[in-house]
Image 1 (cartoon, one colour):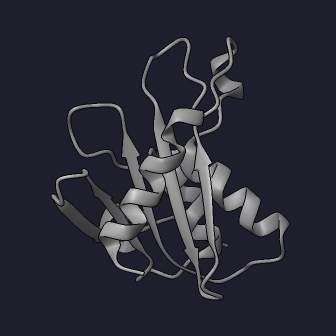
Image 2 (cartoon, rainbow, N blue to C red; image 1 turned 90 degrees about the vertical axis):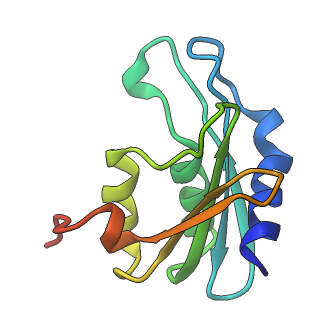
Amino acid sequence: MTNYELILTAYEVIENSYAPYSGFNVGAALLAESGKIYTGVNVENSSYGATICAERTAFVKAISEGERSFKKLAVVSSGRDLTWPCGICRQFFSEFCNDNFEIISGDKEGNIKVYTLSELFPEGFKL
């Protein structure tokens, strides 16, 4: 799967986002080593700490289905700029991914940027 195809997959689910407080809708598409794609959206809560990001939604779906190895993740939003995972998500990725795991953001016009986990989360905390 190309990075652009993964971006489009993330856009396909963004309409399922639940973001009544921020109005900032996010979609994610996670490609596992098995070749299966897991999608996720952000789900907000009036108690902001209970909100879950689209990226973690996709990961939790994959992990609950038995996946443990991942290739790359695309993340998109309703915002005007490219969207990158928050710090909590980056820490979460580091639990399951190596430093070369790719994080992709882009738009429908094909403007795409790719970073590795180590570029977005240098010196991450691991036990």
